[in-house]
Length: 436
Ligand SMILES: *[C@@H]1O[C@H](CO)[C@@H](O)[C@H](O)[C@H]1NC(C)=O
Ligand SMILES: *[C@@H]1O[C@H](CO)[C@@H](O)[C@H](O)[C@H]1NC(C)=O
Ligand SMILES: *[C@@H]1O[C@H](CO)[C@@H](O)[C@H](O)[C@H]1NC(C)=O
Ligand SMILES: *[C@@H]1O[C@H](CO)[C@@H](O)[C@H](O)[C@H]1NC(C)=O
Ligand SMILES: [Fe+2]
Image (cartoon, rainbow, N blue to C red):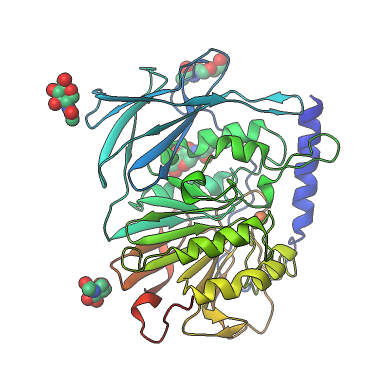
């Protein structure tokens, strides 16, 4: 009871922080009316306590998958049975089970199993905990171009989120990249469970690769001083495999793309473990096998919205790391945090630069805090498109030189492309040689 009351209290102060109500929308598009955070039950059945729920998967290396799910109350083996035909599970693997406490809340059993080696671009059928009641399936990412990423940040769990997820499901994507702010549980832990149920239809079918935002910190003075308790327990990303010492930053390869997930809410200054890991990771990129490099952060380094200006995670992290990314010729930097869409030209050090990354803010997944509709005027020249509407992005790497980026506004439940651009990889531009 106390936990619930406090959670709701903090959730409402969280909304007040945003301070964006009453703004004028510069664009003709009017967002739908606010929708409350919803508790999502499993749509088709009332789960028994041994039934797997909140199933999600993430890529580990280029041929393995981590399967994660939760059960409540009754002991369940951390076993995944899987195979390439429905109902035929020729393979089986066993992993581990954990749980965590947050004030009065005790999580269910969180199971994790690593499966593989798996064949690229193939469908697998699986069941969790040897429980026959629910069969899931996923498709592994391709090993070669083309590969399509869906990108969405600041999801939350409203009707808007549901709409974004439907559009993502229809996009025929290979992998989701999420630049932070997942559940908006804001210390009220049952909202992590309802978020897990909400995203399960998509997150059990394609690898979901996430990094943390401010809503994942969940530190409470006196009551719970440890940060990222729920996030780290529920969303274990492949950090060990990329030589990182922390679940808050890691990297992986998918087809010919090197993806780096950075942590905006852990130390990033020169000399910090994250900074040192980033330098080492960038130094290991082989442009022949991964001609593209994409980076995700939460708090944007470039932003012409009035929301979240001047925060240290934006200003200080940019100061610390922008040159490192520039010298490594990173192609695109995605951020969330601002509940709107904005695409910049290639930039470095505040100016247009043909060898700098394209910066894209895609924090418009649909959380309860609503849209950030106030912009700094006049629009800076380096900002190409900006709009406060809910939606998601798709990044299709066509081959080693060309990629197609599109932003898809939810717009009354139609997936409409609202902004798009062809990108050329910096590795294919002789004027932008990598600088070690
Ligand atoms: C699930 O349980 C609720 C409450 O016990 C009940 O109202 C509902 O009909 C059940 N749904 C299904 C699909 O069995
Ligand atoms: C799975 O096992 C069955 C029975 O042993 C066998 O007939 C089938 O070929 C196997 N399938 C695969 C994909 O290995
Ligand atoms: C989510 O969207 C689907 C498809 O549009 C719809 O059938 C479902 O009722 C929605 N769920 C909620 C809780 O809004
Ligand atoms: C890469 O894709 C682009 C866009 O479809 C195409 O114009 C180009 O010829 C392709 N390059 C190669 C090497 O296939
Ligand atoms: Fe945020």
